[in-house]
Each structure stands twice: as structure tokens, then as C-alpha cells.
Image 1 (cartoon, rainbow, N blue to C red):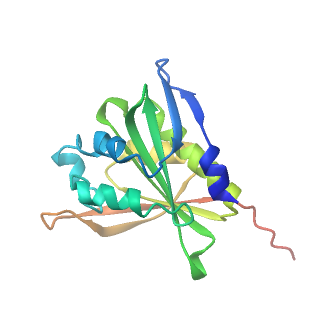
Image 2: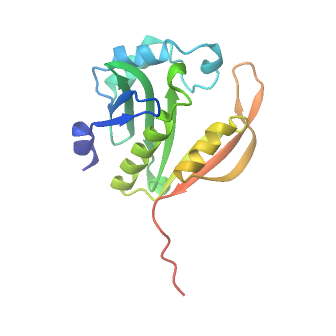
Length: 188
């Protein structure tokens, strides 16, 4: 099933400026690549993370507990240097038909089309897994990111006021977006 497809998956994409990027699943030995991506995150980036990605123990735990049935992590590599990380999160029970997409790109690879290419790969994996809906939560003032997700097919469902709390206690609105992966078959 999906884990077997993930193990062998490799896709080379070309950015608008001609740079070639390899997209592949994260493997247990990728802690150095995770450090390469996340340890360069600056203070502005850090306020958006759910975990302390500067803590090597957090990154090691992600590698040690790698389970493609729960989270499908995707790495973007340029000449064996990690420049992006994306993930597709799966749910259980009544939300087992839903997945959530998350992305982080190195500063030098933002606004170059890499995020959209990674999102499309994650959407494709979600379809192969049989998911019906994908979600994304985007800080409302990140309007370019919202527009990029719309270009991939996501639709803004609502804006959740003060839904995201920064480390200093300030809050930001979040745009909750969805992508329907299966057509509805309602009949009358």
C-alpha cells in the first residue's frame, strides 16, 4: 500500500529559475537533513512551528518514530542539501478520510514555486491513499501563501479568529482551507 509506494518514490522537479530539486520521502537516516533545514530557521520562522525544531532531540524523535501510516514526510534536496520539508498528516476514526498538509521552505527557496510542487506531490499521495479531503491552516496575513494553495485547488472555508497563538501570547487569525479529492456522488 502507501508505505511501499513511498519507499521507492523519487521525483525531480525544475524550478522557474532552472534549479533541479529532488523530492523524496524522509527516511530514518535523515536527521542531518532535518537539521540543515530547521536549524537555519530564524526567530521569525520559529514562532510558527508547533514543535521546537531547534532541539536535536525533537528531530531525532521524528526520525526514530517515522511511520508513513501516520505522517508522510517529504524532503526537497538540491545537490544533497535539504531546502524544504513537507508533510501529509493522516487521522483516525471519524477523520480517517482527511489529511492535513504542512510545509516549510528554506528562505532561499521561497517564492520560487517549490512549495506548490511539493504540495502537488502531497496531494497526489493523498489521492493514492484514498483520502477524500485535505486541509491546510494558514496564517491569514500570509496572503501569498493562501493564493498559492488556491492555485493548487484549495478553497478557503473560513477564517478562524485568534486561532493561532504566538509564543509571546499574541494571536493571529487562521484561514482554514480544504481541497476535495473525491467528487460528490449525491443523487436525487
